[in-house]
Amino acid sequence: MPDVTDPEAPLPDDAGDEVRRIVEQQYAQHINDVLGEVPRPINWRTLPPEDLEHELLELNAWVDWLRHEYGLPAQIIPPMWHRHPELLWELSALRQHWLFCFDPQAKGNQALAWHHDFAIARERLRDWVTISGTRLDRDRPTRITPWPGGEAEDWTEPEAADQPVRERTEDFLVFVRQEAASRRAEQTRYIDELGADDA
Image 1: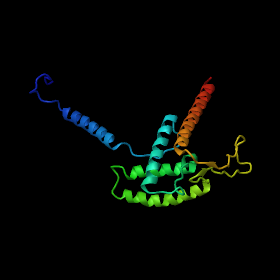
Image 2: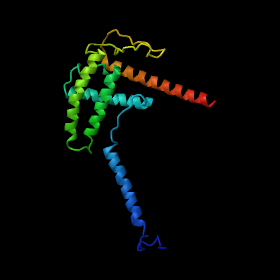
Image 3: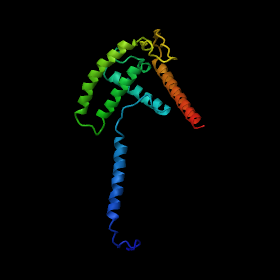
Image 4: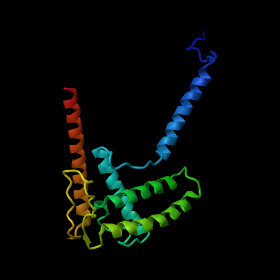
């Protein structure tokens, strides 16, 4: 066995492998730190409350950038988009696609692919805005057509009256708090049900 205190002693045979493994690990960590994770689709139905808050705030900032950057009218992105799940899901998918296409590891043609898909998404957004009934100056919940015998017993049709849009940012922050509180309540109920099943 070589003398580890002797600087002239030869290294063990597997020392090169160990050094290579450490360097590869550090390099992989460095790449991950620099490039981050690959954007994944967001499932708004299953996010924990803290992630829900974070993702809503991130999406809001991106949507605000998008509407300014591309001069999008309220017929494509209305101020109260956050109050309409169909718009939230569409804009979320568009953002995740943008993050993927403009990732440092993306191929050169991905920006063009995103703009192609963005043109198609704008048409869908127009359709969603028309269906939802939300406008620049007023908003109402998206109407849902009840199916005869197809709704849950405790289901109630959403209020359909138009409300004026005044303080959009304030409404968004209230929305985020409400959604996070609702998700926390869901988690608590789920945990309580698990505890009751175990008892």
